[in-house]
Image (cartoon, rainbow, N blue to C red):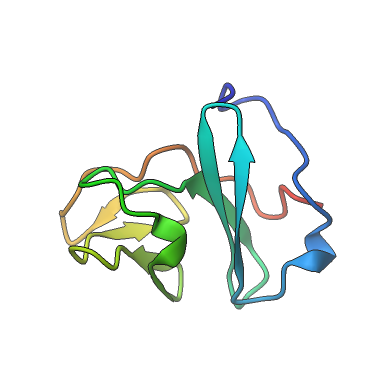
Length: 100
């Protein structure tokens, strides 16, 4: 992945509806990009640190994504593991609207 301070445009923000998600291949891996119902957009590594399941295929509720394999939960706003399981989500959350 690139440096967490380097921004790379992925797609026009209008292409991602509220509540939707997309996966993008980037050098070194995949990014899972989520647009929350409130319009905020976050990007994290698409790999759960527990066993590698794609977080883009997890369940999104509010600003939390839950890995479908073992229910590890991650807060998209800060990457922290919810309920103390799984460690921090890989990658760093973006500022709202990084894909504009």
